[in-house]
Length: 182
Picture 1 (cartoon, rainbow, N blue to C red):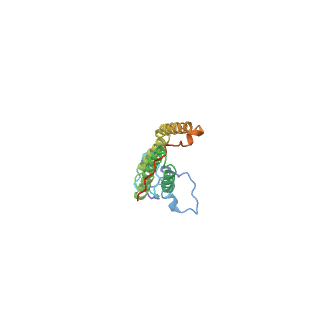
Picture 2: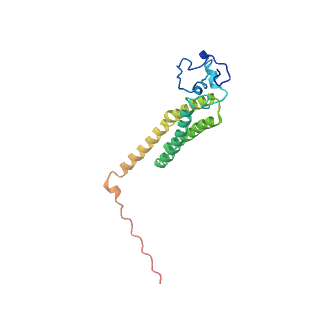
Picture 3: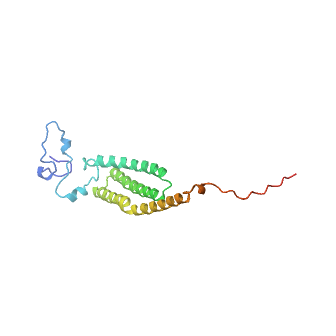
């Protein structure tokens, strides 16, 4: 019995060979099992990243990429409108937006055009690593410096208006009255 990969079937070579076969299960369920000779073979399967080769990973990764892509776009639009007066926070959102757009967009392209799984795996690892670096290493010092500037400005404005006289305008010289034209 061939398992759909063009190889003769030897039960011990395939993942899931120890699973019990049910009489009512269709034969096609067992025809797409991934060969377990070498883990590197699964990264470069002939059909690429497709539902036939990665039936348990393809749809969750593809749907998650689409959901995260939409969430990235929505969060970017909401956060930049909300934080438009704070340049470092807007810059953080832009960095996360472009990283998310490229990573999740590439994952969708890989799913559509059936790239090798190694590309999917590398894109996920590098993209998630980049997002973690942006959020927890690149921008916290910039945000802390910006917060110090905001605190300094707030302190100076409180000091300026600490006395009630500072809020009352002083009477200036009376302006000369304009001559009337006849």
